[in-house]
Amino acid sequence: MSHIEPNPGQYTHDDRPQPDPYRHERRRSTARRTALTVQTVADVAAGVLVLWIALHLLGANETNVFVEFVRDSADILSWWSQDIFTMDTEGLRVLLNNGLPAVIYLAVGHGLAARLNRA
Image (cartoon, rainbow, N blue to C red):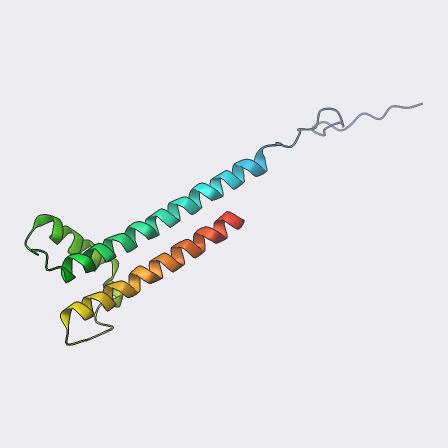
């Protein structure tokens, strides 16, 4: 009976690398962390926009440093939706022009997070 030796570099049945039994769990854990990060970023962006709407509607002092910071942050987050709605009422204009991006950020962020969690 002849015994055939494997070629150099080939694995025999006994010394093949074993698959990592925790690989799927680690990948799922990474997807969950990524989904949580995406969801958190979307929530913070929407929160800043809602905070600016509330501050504006409540008549906050716009020369205050904190109010300026919130207004500038909201302007950065909603640059693409500025003046979509041109109402005569300033409060309604701010509500619509900043509320729309807040809703879109929440919908897209939570939808993307749900998709990542299913992966």
